[in-house]
Amino acid sequence: MASSAPTLSSPSLTFRLLTSLLSSTSSQESTSFFTGPRLGSLTLSRNHDSQPIRVSTPGFMTTTSRGTIPHLSRDNVRKTPGIEWVHVPYETFLEHNPPVPSLQQGPNPLHRFLGFHPSRHIVSMSLRDPSDGRELPANTKDTISAMTIRGVKKVKPIMYNEYVAAVHPDIVFALGDIPFTPPPHSEKRVIKSLERSLAWLATGLRLTPPSSDNQATPPNIIVHMAGGISDVSRDDFATGLLEPIDGADAKALNPLGIIKLDDGITGYTFDLVPLTASLKASSSSTQDLDLDEEIVTLIRTSLVPLPPHKPRLATAVGSPHLMLRLVELGVDVFDSWFAQKAADWGVALDFRFPAPVDGKEKVDIGLNIYDEIYAMDFSRLSDQYVGSREEDQDGKAICPCIACSPKFSSNSISHSTIDILPTEDELAPPISRAYIHHLLHTHEMSAHSFLASHNISVLSIFFDDIRRFIDHCPAEELETNFRKEIERFEVYYSRPEGENGVMEKAKRRWELVDLARGKGRLARERAAQEAGMNEQTGAVLNTGVVSHAVEESAPSKVGDVDLVENVADEVLGG
Image 1: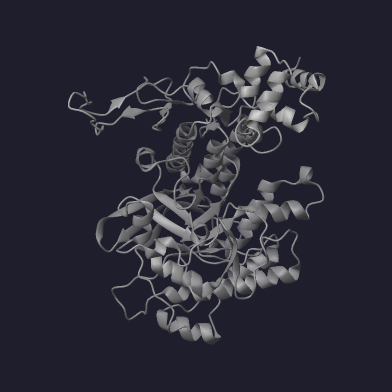
Image 2: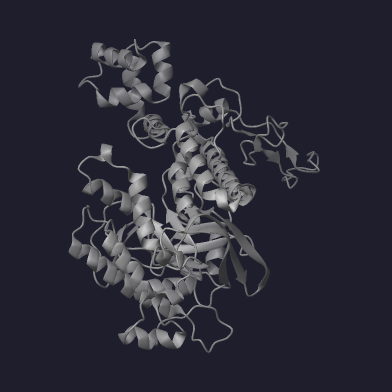
């Protein structure tokens, strides 16, 4: 089986640490473990492309759905800065056999199929979506469960190798036995997870071309750090990567130049969705649980035995607060899941690092544009940024997104000979909050396009600010000063998650507005009209607020006017 496994020649990916702090906590750790915020650079070079792609770290990769960045067309992807590394969960293509992207011919098939240019974009691939925490059937020794649009599919490690060899991604996320059955998980299950993850990683490394092939380069493999919420198990898995391979794996991998599993690994990743679920399930009281501190502790346990010169990733990080804590630990790359989910729910991000110094009370990290207070607010999306057309205000940074800095392209389409086309790109005034509020409540897709571009741009500027702070701060003061700025950020900005967080509030409003369309919409509107609701009630109904209340507390007969009026009065505060 090993001899018939497909091989893959990948572009060369290198990671260079520019600055970092050497931990002084112990002499043993100081030889291998870099802690503290650090600057780095990921460089991907293709055999046929003289211009390498560089991603500065700390930085981020952009998440996709079925290979496309949600809400952004190809032209808007080009207009949104910071989109350099895109990540593709391959399970979304597994409803067909063979998967459709594997039918693409020519070089860089995954790039070509999805419309990402090889000279501008790094494309990575994993089997599962790291932000998808839905319950799945248990993995087995030989298969891992994947969620397709037509249900669950069992995937064997050798099948995953074939998918990777067919589409040639720049970076491959190795298979990991992450339980998506309800936590908590037994010690026996965690041990199985470690054994399977190491075995599947060895299978994935067989994609490496023979060492005698001087023209081929090994695949760039990122490994999920297994071990769940057990410090001992996490240390065991990290140590297992550094131990010499034996048995059949040694016979297959040693000729490829891989003596220990870590020799074939490009970097390490931490998936926070299953980690968070396990922490919550194991805690007797979620109110007393400091999730950020627990996550930082577990990740530190995994990193201590590992070499510092490889990139470290974290996926599905739910707030900039935790991102900063992980940057402080030495994590290099995050995904944009948080920012893109905010766009889904109608939140325009609006935060900076370091935090402003004039804060007297906590402010949200973004604006819930669904809220009625923005219905007549004609200011730009952000208070912390200005548009390209606006003059600099108090040193505020420019947000280059398609909402804050819209521009008319010089490549306009001519529909007739009398059309007057612009000769160059023309900057337009920023899109207002009131306009996007209107688009959200009328279910216009362009609302989420504006928000997605804006939020990704804000995230890009956020990491620019972090890198600038690390670069300009004296090395001997960096650890102390960065910790102070994290604490000040946490004091100034409210956390987005939780019952009163801006994300949860926006999600509830999104659900209410979403009920204003779809099955049953006309019946709900008719019930409100027959109940004799006044104009104010009707206006709220159109936004979905009353319609949701009527649906939840609907009378058995439409003619039950009193009950419907009581529901409307309650929603309107009457």
